Every structure is written in C-alpha cells, then in structure tokens.
Length: 135
Image (cartoon, rainbow, N blue to C red; front, side, top):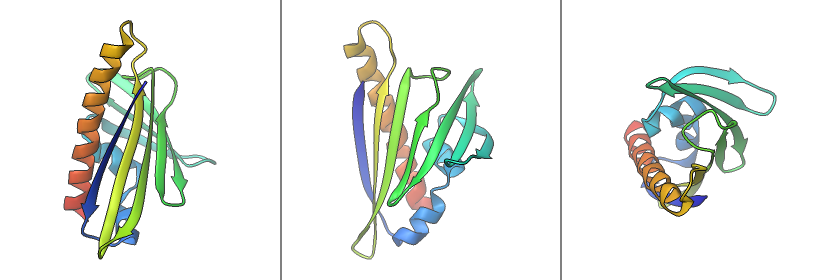
C-alpha cells in the first residue's frame, strides 16, 4: 500500500466547500469514472461508478471535517483504496486536504503500488482543481 496526500487552498468558506463535496461530485471531480448510481445507506452513501467495462462501488461516510470513502471489495481498479477529505478554515477560504492509500495487490508491489499512487495523486489534484473552479 502507498499513501498520497494533496492539499489546496479553495477561495470559498468551509460551509460552501462542504456543500459541494457530495459523493457524486467527488467521483466526478476526480474524473476517472462516471457515476452510475448513488444510494443512501444507514452509514452514508454508496456510489456505483464505472468506465471502459470496469465497475466499482465506493462507500462514503460523513466526518466532522469532511468525507471519507473506500472501494468496496476487490471489484475495481485497486485491491484496496481509502480516501479522506478534510476541510479547514484558512485565510477567508478553505484548506482542502485529500489523503488516499492505494494498493493493487499485484506482484512487485513496490513498483505497481508506486504507479497506482502516482495515478491516484493525479486524480486527487484534478479533484481539488475542479472543486476550486466549482465553488
């Protein structure tokens, strides 16, 4: 497993940022998968998403300072993937931080997980850029 972290200043108050960070929007902001369904559960939401014949389910839950989500099972691009999004007040705007741990579960994990983390970091950067443009 590899961990990545990306942080960005968003020129909007935390309340506006948190309203924009819906499970559906997070998946769309990342840009790798298309949202197919969002289901409310007792614990939060489950987003079914897919691209190019690949489908995955992401379980989201609210946290006091943002959201957390994880890939359910191994039916997705990763053997495991978990992400936390936190929003904090900063200089008349918000500091949004996304932390993710990913593992492919392939031989030569030192190489394959590094590639997965590199790709994941790009998705997180894209998500923060799109969030900032959206609020």
